[in-house]
Amino acid sequence: QVQLVESGGGLVQAGGSLRLSCTASGRTFSRYVMGWFRQAPGKEREFVAAIHWSGGSTSYADSVKGRFTISRNNAKNTVYLQMNSLLPEDTAVYYCAGKPDSSVAYAYWGQGTQVTVSS
Image (cartoon, rainbow, N blue to C red; front, side, top):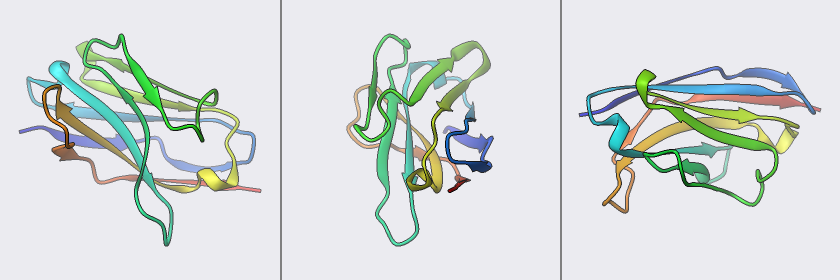
């Protein structure tokens, strides 16, 4: 079992920055692909970014490319999402998720952290 706890959300003005953190419990974190997703009010949850367990491969949604950076520290069982140049449309609940490298679906999810970007 892996438990995920997000932190770092908050209220920020457009153009500002936030860094989200997701700390995992469980010995297998270092072998998991980790991802960030978000869900805005009235919208479906959408993919934001993902990082391979080795940290050597990342992927991003087109809407955040060049503004967001995902990284991880396996020694600290933590994955980060650095968000720069935030826009009001980035407002959402952000969720951390993890899955074994061989799985298609994310098996473990955090409780989410609210990010609100004011214009």
